Image 1: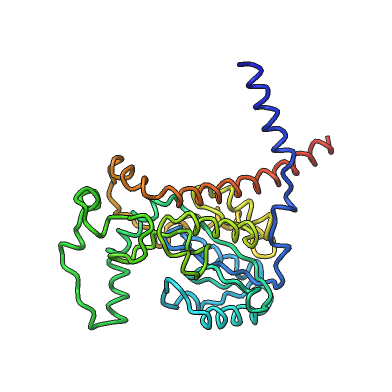
Image 2: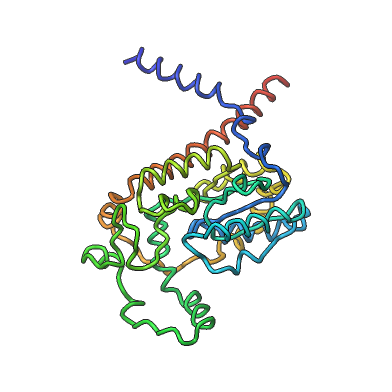
Length: 316
């Protein structure tokens, strides 16, 4: 057992030694100094938006807010992708563009690549969050204001219990692997935001979609963070994209309450553990992608932390 532990320790030490912040930083591959945050739904993107609002003057950023008001589409046509890519490529240096939109391939349109970032969240927690968000008074008030003729949902729909919705087999709470058409829009495909607009990205919990999403993250994204690891995420943002995130941790601490409470659902009831487990079984590949992103984030964090420790040791 001792020898096995020693071998494991050596393997970990070798892995840590091989971590290189430069190789893990895709910011250097960007061809324009523009940040493209193609935010996933229900990952805490509103909190990051609020942080950007605080960093705007601090880091001399230009917030491009048009994308915040665009209607969300599951797929964009080729000409729509091109138009969006052209728009982003024309922004001035130091611009931040934020939109709920899938990954865009700028190279396919012979356009310069921006700095890609995004966030991820536990897949089951995401769909539960969306379920209650869709029933929120604020969201529905905005929708009905935009479309006054839209039919008003019943009181029973607003009061529907999630635990019972799953257990009873209600179509709204069934997350069927490889499904393409959904009973109701629920943003259950976290990988879709990283996979892109190809038809192969649409089937839910698809290994092919996950693989494409992983390739895009590994090749293009500077940072894919998570509010589940706030300090790690902000540290990596600061170290890997300093032009946009210098002072992010300090600003976050100063405005913590305002940032973390933006768009937060304070009335989400407790979901039973067995219900979460029932759902989780249908998210195997979505979890594979989620853990891939988290592991990459930890590698980036360790790479810069080990470098700083080495510098400190040399000083001593």
